[in-house]
Image (tube, rainbow, N blue to C red; front, side, top):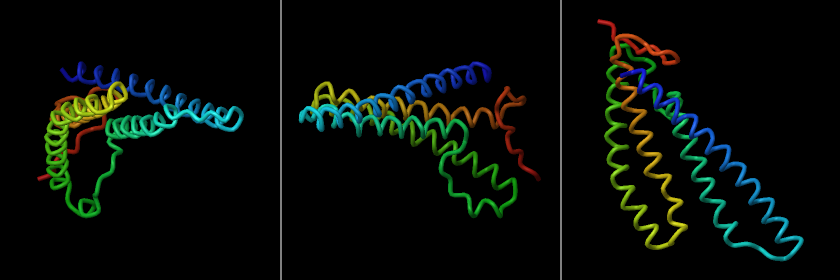
Length: 166
């Protein structure tokens, strides 16, 4: 089961990296196109101007998902540095459980958000599909971190789980 989870996570990472490259390339292309059309032809494009913030949002959420995959997301660990490994293990367990729960709740509510965006903005509202994607991937990664923590053996490329000391 862990091998299947690892394969899914690797496939998601490859997909995310590809979308990040495409989004960044589009962002650079749109910026250059907008500058050229505005300065050379005096024809600013509002559609290109509106696409920029959406691309930045996609880049930010996909980057956050990649950071979560590597366990490099923002954590407040100042107090945990001075605690024993047993407390850190339980804190990590609580963080992964809480993260799974919160991302699951946000996933459910994000579908209603996307429906509202589509109703308000038409096809432009479909760009908000990044929210359900991000929340589902984040919930999956928190849940996978829980499963890796209790795994009897490690899968290649995963960090060893922190074992509590008595």
